[in-house]
Image 1: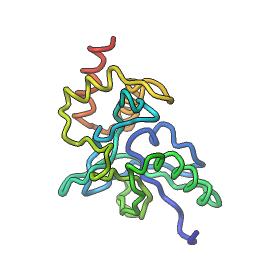
Image 2: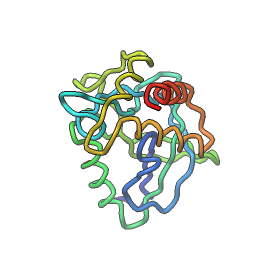
Image 3: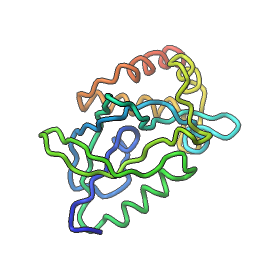
Image 4: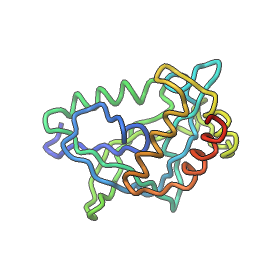
Length: 179
């Protein structure tokens, strides 16, 4: 590892379940991407026979995504990358990227994050919000119901003061479908 701190950008479940040693966390913005339920989940929130959906960073020129920047505890960089790669690259629908993020105070740092590969079979960026809601309402995988993933993410975004209108709409719609 270099002598620079390792930063990780989280935009979905990493925000509420990082799974690695964190020295510091700050709200951060990543430009050029948006958060979207654009990846089929065949492991964690669905199965191969009944896939769910998980969030991914999808390229969006002119767009941006607010999430969390995590500074990894010094000395835990290699362990953290191993943990993240085992978790995020389980089916290689994501690729690991080093990206510039802007922390809430204005400082820009390089961060590791995971971006969806639009050429991968699990990419499903064409789904409407209504289609996403129907899938999320019924899907269940080895880490639990897809609804839990959605609700936890929206709850954490709300706690951080981050507005994501698409996720807010999905959350309300799924809560009506699965009271």
